[in-house]
Image 1 (tube, rainbow, N blue to C red):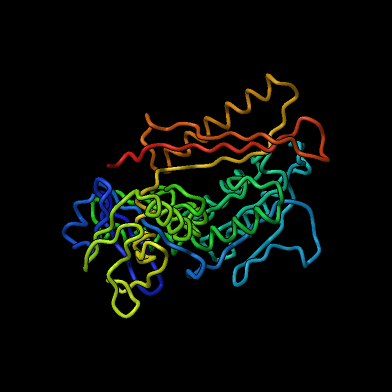
Image 2: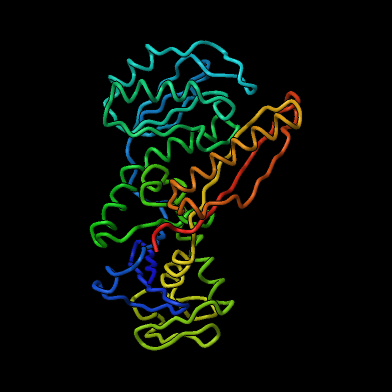
Length: 344
């Protein structure tokens, strides 16, 4: 039995999925016997922590500095060009001073050129970890976008969501002790609780994606929903009371199944997925094949970290696009990997 959970602002929806049958509500004792739990949540209104943002690059106007709200930010010398050429040595002393005096534990690090060469972001992370042992560090190169400000904004938001993601994961583990937990990705698929703690931004719109998946599956007749007041199959409608479906969750859609239930069901249908996006340089087919192999290997490693059973991990998609208006031999590579959950 797989447990699907939709965490909403007003209500919690839990379904049990077993051989195509979707049952709700689910008793706590039954829930704790699940082979795994798949959680869908939207983090748009979640509490955020103040972030210490470190940008590695050249000086810029005040209006273009990192946007951190209640946090703190600094810009230090360093970074690379889009082709990986060093622009200037990393100012390690400035990094060390900022880390030691900012008084924060959630860090976001963004360096120019890091999608091509992440050396300076990794060096900053090592310095921060030495100065602030309890630090939680997000590196922008792991998001892969070529644009610095886009990567920086995502790194800062990911860092800001870290403590709340940890609280959510802790709550799930406490409520369902011993049940392996997965979280729904914004673009579909699942990630492990460990991965969710580290990259909560990947699940920012997990409930939205899960609702779409659940609604589609129900419309295609993929499952039969058994609620407290009866059975709702696609096209038959669901038992309701005063326009609110049993379980206290607003209902909508042709199938008459509550949105919360459809969201929880959609989460339960997912499988672990991971994406790797990089800017690479290759002069010739042989070099491009080599960097693609590296990207595939990284994607397979990442999807196992996201909760896929190692023997089941495989490459789902590879896209390679030349970058226009830049030197020849630069490509944007995106690799998607997936696999079967190791639990259940």
